[in-house]
Image (tube, rainbow, N blue to C red):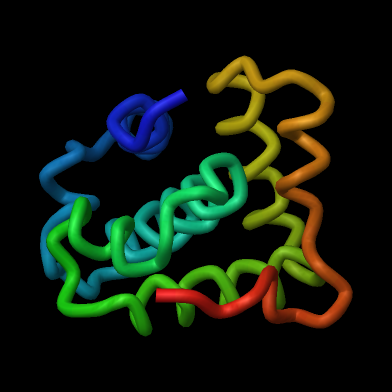
Length: 116
């Protein structure tokens, strides 16, 4: 599993491009997929730091990724549409049961520990 594979899968699902996800647009059509992609990347590839993910996606710094992970982790618990998006993307990624379990929202709404 790689960042590029996750980005391609998310982009395909939302009918946008990986360049859109890596871009700076704040429109919801792009920002929701970007947040989901960051959440999935961080959860499935935990050895990558927030800074590594931010650098790969062309974002300013690691705090953006931290915010995205926290935001999705919080919203996924109460937003059935967001939960549906995540479930369908996970199916498209072909994750095994252990990897799927990693995507379960954390009860503390942070998602995981902070690192750089």
